[in-house]
Length: 217
Ligand code: PMT
Image (cartoon, rainbow, N blue to C red; front, top):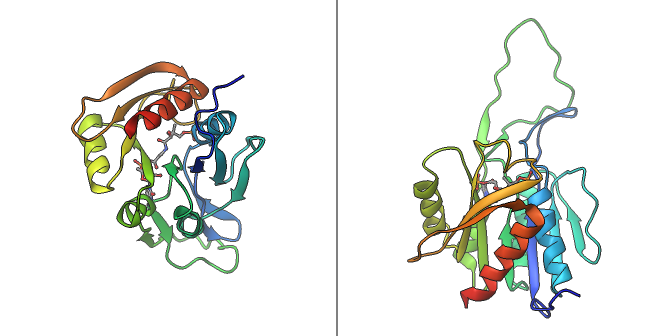
């Protein structure tokens, strides 16, 4: 049996992509499969936590023993995270959130007319940075998906979003990161050397992330 070292902790996790509509049949999204976030939810539940998983559309099976909330667009994810934040002890944003949404979602399917089409994209709020502003004792964990200048970009996000821990992902590799079975990450904390978690399954990485979270206090 798993050690119940997260018993009594309320853990809120976001996972998967967001989907930003263009018209009734089209959308903007990204390559997140949800695997990393679902692995975190499964690991926390097995270790005794009370888990709420907020998920964009994925092909994965809902983890057992977890409260599950389905979302689509970033706006809906933001509303759900903010609503559940104050009653949580540990909050992890593993979702790959769209940084933009389409300004005017077309009410009907856009017809082609031989001309080019321009979409005007408007910035989405940074959900995680917003949680960093309102946190009161919650342990706040963010992810960073980077393709270059990994450590510099990761450290910037750690600081700017007021995080306790940042999980740095190299998404330029195809053997880890988006949609892969395995991952390899660096755990970044303020005033500490980054800690490499060598390539292993997302389930193993998830457990190592919770080991680190329990070491934070
Ligand atoms: O789902 P998988 O296929 O398993 O792949 C997911 C992953 C392995 C790549 C995952 O671990 C990961 O890196 N997820 C976060 C991807 C991401 O959106 O990173 P980012 O660097 O764009 O954002 C940084 C952080 O801010 C993230 O915690 C993100 O959830 C959050 N964010 C970003 C934009 C925004 N508007 N609001 C946010 O809250």
